[in-house]
Length: 412
Image (cartoon, rainbow, N blue to C red):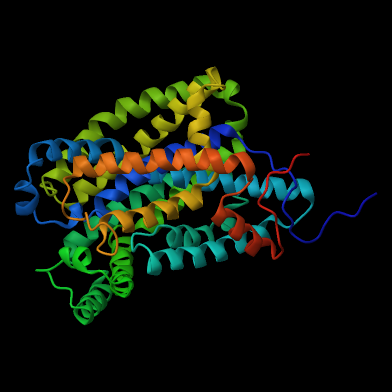
């Protein structure tokens, strides 16, 4: 009998599930649509400036639908897929007789490093650092029952609402030290409320971008703290872990009826609440922070689950549909494409590139974002014709396994 391997090693031909890659590609589209509002600096413009744009009327409609259909939904899908991926990693490792947790912890450690580089060198809106940090807590739930996973996930999703109630009731400012650090670093870089965000568009030095990102890293930390994002992300990881345990992605036909119910109730519940959330966001939270936070919690997850159920049911009936191949290609290169969106955003919107930031309405920005994603679809299709992994995926895997790996597709 052969001795099982004791050191982590990638499989020669890892099985991929098209539905997961397609869902990941769909999430990348939504993330691009969501992030480019900030990358273009439109989100940071004063209301008086956006109202004076020629496209103001169209932008208001586009902004509403961005809050309604996009905001929060796609990072939710990405987070769920992360939890599913965790279960797959452990399952594959168990089948090979290797230590899946060791592999996973190395993945998180190097993902944290990649996220830090992304945050400081490219864009201060990075999410990878948070994913890696929260990911380290996932092994604590390995032996938790499925029911307990769902209950814990629900509690974690509602915890931020309770925390926002406490913040408003007691006047707490949990991120005060981070805000102070941000102001200091902005001051050192010469960034003021009067020249931000135009400062970034007018600056033509990459060194200025680095200074901006250093201060932006603290802004991002403030967003994580004030938004209680770690609790939300962990909740979604746990829900994804539950889905992975049930292997719903591999047995869609057996889950057809439950998926139909998820689609129905997700849209019935999510659509009106998402519309209220969008109105609240557009109206600067007229019912207060706790109410806005509750609307977010109760609308985002149902809509995201409805999106995923819709894709799964469509795939279950039409697995050879061309759209799934088109979405799966960028989904296979998710890390490369996520970071690539930041590189393209810098080139398009910052002063070191075409300096189009703060000049476009949100409707135009979304057209640009769609164009960027379509470019990534073409790039991914061409890349996957000859390579198994994307450029960053390849580097990440070599770091994880500590050995040279060829990125070329095996022809076994």
